[in-house]
Length: 627
Image (cartoon, rainbow, N blue to C red):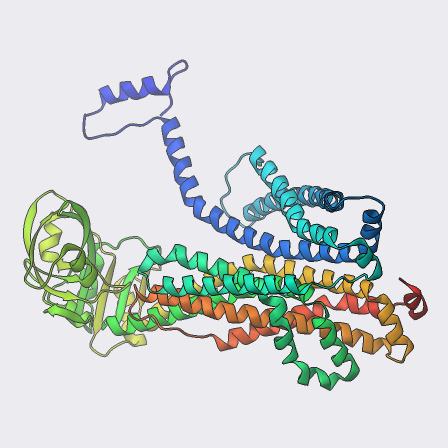
């Protein structure tokens, strides 16, 4: 309704309130309605926004390793130059500051580039969604000052933070020692400290994760997240120590490639810190991917098992869009040829002991034939004022078989009900069940969540066709047997996993760039060595093979660590979930884990293409003369 010119929305609302029947209508202003809808949209999008920020943080975390690795190699190549600056009077702070200023410039350029690219991607996605038929609200592209400031601050600060440690490490090297050797080796003290801290972080992470698995439900989520972070940090710190035995395990396979294979293995462990930083980026991405795959596969198996164990019905009928069914659907199904038992499941709010509880109305005479729920106390009897209650609800109220309680229905009428039995609930069937004949008179608009159906000959194509025809072949109504329910659950988990894979692909792409970057700079650093290898008879093909095998070994090292951590986190999260889902069972997706390991190997091969080509094309005489 539109107001006349000069009349405010509040004044129009006041006039409508006076004109319309009191208590039977409700008016609101257009501004308030728009604000309410905006808040609802913002609330619904908050979860998606947080999820995207989490995956962006993962990619940023992985990128930090690459930045730190890059600056470590850059500083190592300029060790003599920095030592000369120290020798002519530059202090440690000045050397560190010079590295940080360089990182600041790089960070500004990268942040501005990323901001512009992100704005372009956002505008492109909006146009793409519109062209695909999705409803996209009209309006300008919103770029808030907070977005610009956050992008620039994060880009600059992360780059400077990643460059600070390499700069500080270079500044601490004595000038004479630095000028005598380009590659200053880590001291025994630093290695002992690193390994000690790594062991402490790893042990603390494992302890916290294991403790979280013994907690109930949401209480263990925060501790498990903290433990996972501590363990990942600890493994990252210990990666240089772990690289030698794990890469040594690949020695028998590398020997098959002759001299190139032996050189590749030696190069892989020559600088354990560099190998660790390169492999860790891929490790984090594969840890998350493997953990989520283990969780999704185990959950799907558990829900399938739950459906098979808890439901005796041959079919479950529901709306495809998740809305409620008309009670007429249940009556039509009960009258269909071959149907032996049906029970609508009807939800209704109530008040019990001052708390809101949802009641589930069922057909008391048929529900025992359609479900197979374990009874812990009493008998599974529904009818009149006798109800059955799931174990968790009974525990929260202190009920047992024979207990009585007063319920206040939706129409505010009260009734005394008796607990006939306590059953083990699950994610599919739980709550307080009472007969629809008792519940429906107190419900204003009866509607069913779903209808369970049992047929004389069991589930078959003919029985499903009869049920579908009885409902007018309505595409909005789903008629599902147990296999259909399992398939729909599988599709849901597959869709979720594919979305997560797509988001985590950012971290894998960043990891690939890191491997390429490390190998390219390593080739540049070892130019003289590569020239000598060429001079003593190793051909270009052998040089390429050496670089490719080195990349393959480092990538597989990161892949093995990532898959191992992912399986551990998947198991731990499953143990936590198992406290709420009795049918939960760990299922290891061996085929997918093999694919992930193959993906790590593919990353290694692809990342080595350009560095290997560059190494093979080096002029051996110029390389030998290079400093």
